[in-house]
Image (cartoon, rainbow, N blue to C red; front, side, top):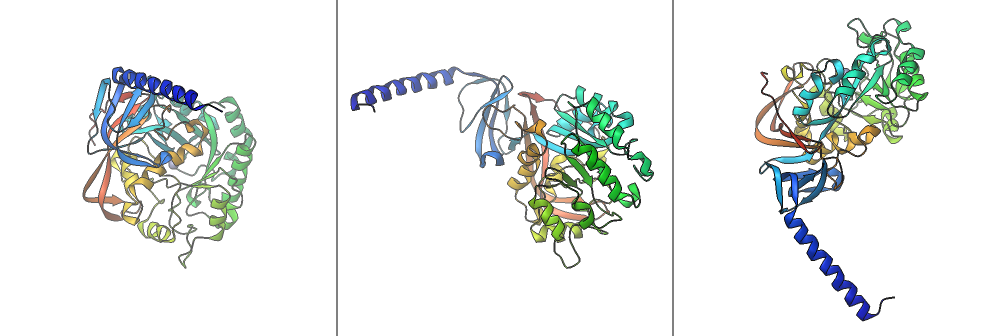
Length: 399
Ligand SMILES: [Zn+2]
């Protein structure tokens, strides 16, 4: 134990160190300072006006009034400053111009959800490898990928050996399996396609993402095949076979799936995945999404998707807070795929991926997938993106 004198001298030495730290701080030169924004980071339970200081590609301080010089400064007063957005259901790897477009929207991490199957898996893998921000790929259990006439309408296309081969060849980029199970994609084969997709994913202990909605089989039969860590996308898909029953309750098998660790994802998309009356019925039960995702492609700015911030705005009118919406697009998706495990946060030491968003008040129209519109009083817009500590320039693009 320290004597009183030893304690005092130790405390004095501590104070001296503290003083020199403060002097050091005053001389610090940061690469980037994001000043005066409303910082919302659900991973840190933080919501307040702060500066964010960045050096060497990392967050080095989040504090009120950070002193020091910076090579670059973003004036974020009146804006939201949140961790870089993570979108776990996109088709960004369809072409090389996808990832940079998403980056402009604030998306600093993405998953391509089954654009391609085993036959052409090298194509999305190449796009993912060339992407500035981390991007990973799910292999479609249908060997030919997304097909107009149905990925596995012909059951022979759901080839487990080929899918496993594709995973084995690209372990660094292929991080799961995708199975689209709607009747117009697999006919009456949903159960068998799901079984095969799970066989391929489980062999590598990887997650399976299923695309639900308008399946032939009831969800009670399909969901029992989902393991912890799997993802259900298009959770707001209207009947037949939505997650909510006619009596307004969530199906017991759906509740059981969430309890054992299955994630529920929005997957906004364009056709068949989201209808406002179903959204309202599900939101009313309190069964809210774990993650937002867009089902994005390079045409999305011309559709009801627009961008990730727009999709994040759609549930604000159903009682979701802005903080919850940010959680669904940052910290929660960072938990779903290990590639993002050090992201989705502004914690000191984390990679400096930041989305600066504008939360505008007004009278905004939001589209579902059935030409249905709702109006909302607030909408998020992308303002600036920082990736790896550097500001991303936003190209002027015609809508
Ligand atoms: Zn999709």
